[in-house]
Image: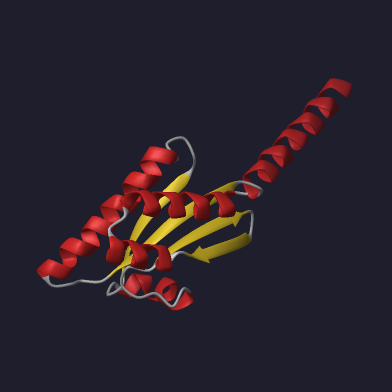
Length: 135
């Protein structure tokens, strides 16, 4: 009987530990908001998307960082677009730890990069901003 009670108690403690670990898990999502654009504007938008994705792959290959392209015109994304007041080429880092969510809009970095095409500065600024939210 004591072994049975002990086994049940251990099962409950293990189950609670698993639930706690899942609720305190930290995830980072990089949201890239994108519009349906004409051909030449779409190329620039696609280039920015590709460069952002390459920075994440290059510097954060083993982290749980998700990269999501959010189409502005898609009705399913209406709440996200409103929540982050997103326009084309808006980039938001979203950190979720348990039920707490922290976000950082880094669209100014993308806008600067679109103007000056300085990839080294772009990578440096994206890394710094992402490292801040990873803390």
